[in-house]
Image (cartoon, rainbow, N blue to C red; front, side, top):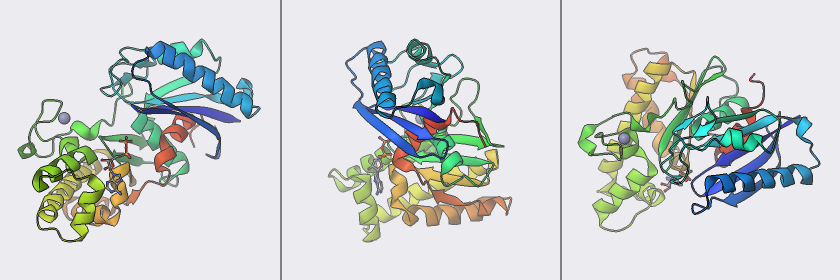
Length: 303
Ligand code: ADP
Ligand code: ZN
């Protein structure tokens, strides 16, 4: 048996047929056309999905179901993408209902960070644990929560939107109107924006971490503070959710130990529950494919 995963993003949409072992046996990708009406885009996704299944000689009755991961906010109960900032035309789109006009298997929608959390939990870095948290630090910041081998999705599927948790108001106003959100301080977008201001030229987050390695006098104190703020966020998450492990994905996680070591040290120092201070904080395993594999895994019976 298989599942079909669909990962909808602001720039691309990925489709994959995934086995119950987490192996991708067929995949397809299309650009997210922001000019096209969502309904038309969904019809195209359905057509491409049917072609993909046909190309691999897989019939619909060999599918546990279809899982869709999409940017929040959404309403997983009603199967609707509601008002994601990076899909400006997608307002209250009943994607599950629209897909169900093309397929008769169960279809499930969850936010993309939840899907990635399910992927890591089922097949990746947290597969040997029952309680895990997945944090993505990329252009934005989000999380997926697994507790007792169950995805905690909240009332509408938006649980884990940790990017707008206030960490340090002195960092100024976030797009949401609050001051000092986690995402406003620690996302790739934020790091690149602030480092570019410091240096007076455009600097990417990757470059910022390279300069950090060379002990750049402007970058080191700045990034030290940002990484410390990440540590603060992780302590709060551990205290709130008591996970056995935290898996970190997203582009910025590629900075590796420059990030992980100081975060682990901070967590060890400031988590009152000493055992929780040793919570493993590790790099994601599936990364690029986590979204689409996790979307598919939403259809599998959880372990
Ligand atoms: P998206 O948010 O579109 O899914 P990514 O997860 O790839 O994209 O995240 C992109 C962000 O990650 C960018 O801000 C980019 O600069 C940053 N990034 C990518 N690679 C690295 C790296 N090796 N070190 C630090 N930051 C990185
Ligand atoms: Zn915010």
